Image 1 (cartoon, rainbow, N blue to C red):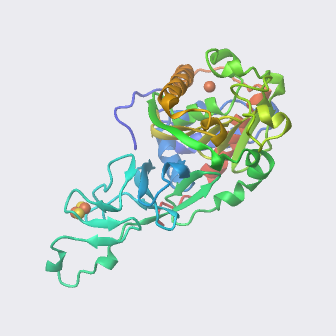
Image 2: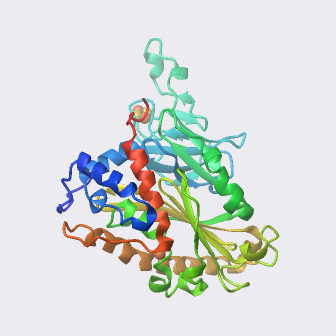
Image 3: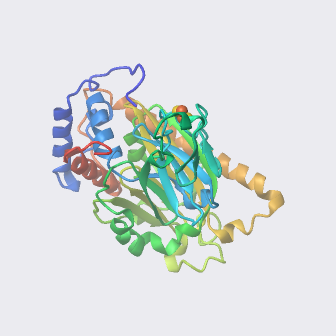
Length: 401
Ligand code: FES
Ligand SMILES: [Fe+2]
């Protein structure tokens, strides 16, 4: 994952000790006095390697949604900290994850991003596995004395689901059980929406010239929305004074605000009987640490799973899902046009954000910067900073240890 020919800047060679010290100091102050993420965090190659080990090899990473793989043999592929991942729906409906590498000589097994198969056959020597990772066939291996197919399975990874999202951890022993640590977020805030009933309608990937945390910084504050999203989200008209930032948590952060309009985009459909009162026009922007971002609305949700490709390059896998009562209003003949319009809207919103995210990376490359500060509704950034400080300070067992 350590990059291509990255251009250097004054922070590129910052030592891990110095970056960790800055991170710790930034997290030690109360929010009222807090300053933005130390610039070196998004430029130091030593820190990039450290966060791969301390964050991406340890934590739960969102790879998509359960309803993207509804039937036996449906699969998604992903990559976490350089580990190719294959997630497959089983006959009994369980979803399990594997390292997407053949048990013979480790060729990447399934190249497609998604699809459906009852057997996975390696392109190299045709070793063939069932959906549960068992080796069914290994051509000519009867020529090897004592070869036992049962000893050669795909390597399993930890996998769990929460509110319709699928998460994988490449850690040998993940420290936390995600549904348990996210229970307060579900019970107090997002559970009422029943995100698991939302149906996925789009899945995309994009790469921008920025650090993955620049996108995190951008997504977890809505201060920029009225200014930067004139063609899209600003039209939901939510005064900044109405935003509420959620409690400090070790596992997530969120902010929320109701829009004025009680019908139309951003409001609950009349057939939505899950939401009451102002929740029928409430947007919740939340983040499951480290990198799963969701804008949750009564009439759709937009999620992103963002990962580093270098200090100066990030990849975002994102998708859209809508609740069933909204989808019921879209007739089959008009579905493609409806989806095209939705995609165009999201493309515009992403373009509005891309220039900001890349600007964060470019500006923070400077060694000479003003002190910086946060607006009161940017508390989620300070919460994310504190999360990073905590996980980056802990010991670092390697994946699989
Ligand atoms: S590497 Fe997959 S069958 Fe040989
Ligand atoms: Fe934005």
